[in-house]
Image 1 (cartoon, rainbow, N blue to C red):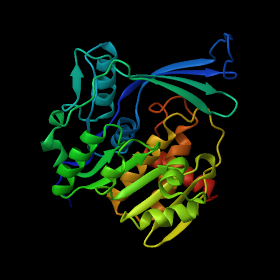
Image 2 (image 1 turned 180 degrees about the vertical axis):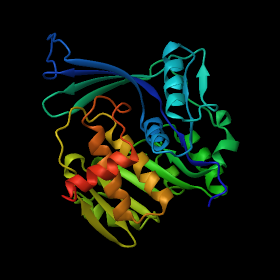
Image 3 (image 1 turned 135 degrees about the vertical axis):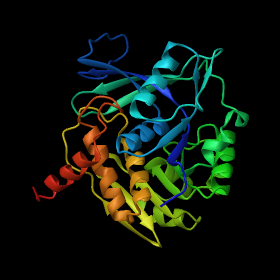
Length: 306
């Protein structure tokens, strides 16, 4: 048993998602009606923590919102999931980030506009060292690099492993990578980082940088996973998606869950892939998070065992 209070603490962007499911993406000068609408908390790290908390694990989030009604809604929703928010900063002089998301009902693909125009950057001094020293895994999105590096230093010094969600290449991201144990990245990030267009070759090249595991996510084509000098392909689970918003975030939470259970890479990625697939049959990143039992049953059905 670990003596840490939390399986995971996360540091990163939090936003309020405004999600419209539409018949098709609107063109210039076009006005269309939404088929469905939902407002939920968003952001890669907090959604991953919501998944972990929904799986029964203890988590805490460190991030910055405005001291406005939207910021309070985000904090309340995290609390409902069981995520500790005592280290959240609600800045009275900032406006909470908002994501405006259009989802194509035909395939669940979405387009996102993120509004961070009136939010102050988080400062390293606003981190909570006590929480960072109390986790087995630190989950980062690398968006605010100085804060991410300081958080990683504190957590690593206390024995934590660092999991990075690297969806897009960011300025000075290389300065953070020396602290990262587990890399979960998009195909674009992997290509830019390694100059390899083939995901298997890219994953092996990334392993040479000292990461324990590397996962390159490929959307409906699954993922390429690498550890111990070798890689393999994990196929995506076949579903009829309603909305892919938050699927990657749920994948990250489920991946950390597998790490915490001591599962091997194949078992961890299969579970994470199933959890992400199940999320896609509901709108938004939070409402679609399944339970552990639901994920296990889903995998058994897909394997023809039930």
